Image 1 (cartoon, rainbow, N blue to C red):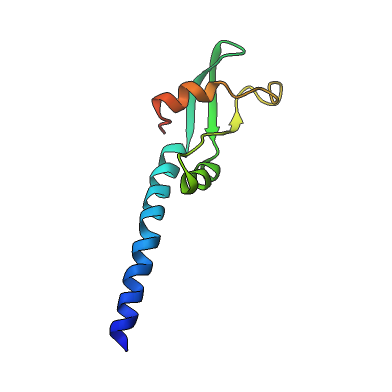
Image 2 (spheres, rainbow, N blue to C red):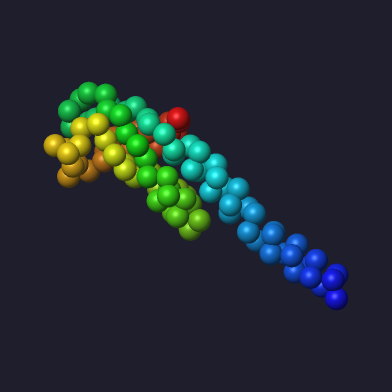
Length: 94
């Protein structure tokens, strides 16, 4: 009976490990403080990307980067997060 359990374990791991591996890479890229130019103020801003949101979207399709905190918030809280376009194109780096 143990060979059946080994086969079940193998296929379970084959389904679980690749998404976890990809999610780890996405979280490491998104985690930390990133610098980008604010298109509204035309100054450099320090951003923190929402890593958990990036992981959730990565499991479905390509990861979507979203600002978690910004050095210009709370006065610019309702911004459209256009700074993420440049940050996503170059790839967020810690």
